Length: 98
Image 1 (cartoon, rainbow, N blue to C red):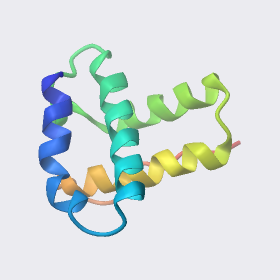
Image 2: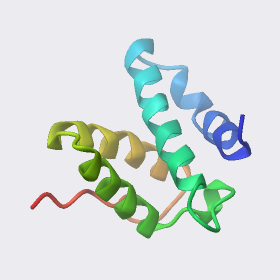
Image 3: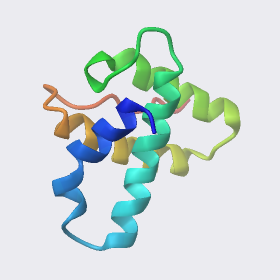
Image 4: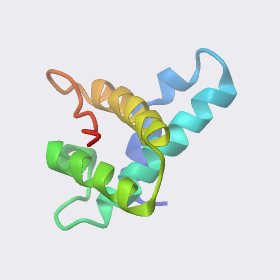
């Protein structure tokens, strides 16, 4: 397991302990898919290396894969929770649907 994946699980541990477990697991899976994709980008080894550009590129990647707007929106909700847990200022980047 990659270090960045361990970081996500450690960061979201408190979040995972409350609420319906099935939906929380699904959200954690989306977060992990995002960080695994982001770790394949140059210069990203830890959560601290993630920036707004990585979020935008991930949304574009999902669109190129042919995912529906609803599915991409679900990813953005999960990723925004990770953004907040990381202690980032302002709001997480949202997808721009054209």
